[in-house]
Amino acid sequence: QKSTKSLFKQVGDTEKPDIVVGKMLEGRVGILVDGSPIVLTVPFVLVEDLQNSDDYYSQPIRVTFVRILRFIGVILAVLLPGMYVALEKFHYKILPLEFLVTIMNTTQGIPFSPFMEVLFIVLLFEILYEASLRMPKYLGLALSIVGALILGDTAVKAGLISPPAVMIVAISGLTIYCIPDQAPQLYILRMLFTFAGAMLGFFGITALMIFV
Image 1 (spheres, helix red, strand yellow):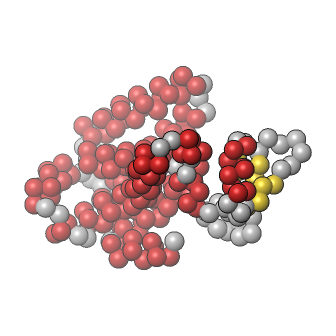
Image 2 (tube, rainbow, N blue to C red):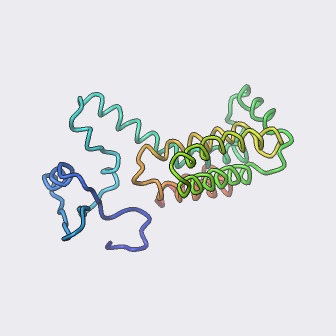
């Protein structure tokens, strides 16, 4: 990679011949190494991960809609926890009154600040995900689903975390896998935007967005 300190991928990789040919027709270079089934493609552009090889075998209207959904999913995955923290900590006045009352009722008595609450849930989900990866296949699936349900429900009933925060982090965690090839980068960005929202509110989120 040209810039080793960059957060984003600069080299694409695939094992499908039609993807390699498609990228070569778009002007990219395919690099094959003897003994490896993976072909590297350069230069790699971030928007390539919003595409899918199956898109080209489907109807254009459907594919356009799905690609827009993927893009919205990425935005939600990265910004949702940070925006929730910023709204609850700095900008609660812009929330509709009914929604604000609901959040206040559910967060009353929570011992953590909004940022610490979201950070705790994110770390809890990350630990469950890492544990499920290293368990046997069927046990890992059960661990991730049952563990998230039981721990999340128990923590809410114990008054450690609030239901809106669990829902926000869960939606963010699900939408990250709209483009699974960028999941590691999106995890890091999600944490950075959560920190920015906790420190400076929407101003911090906007500044970090411009920087990224």
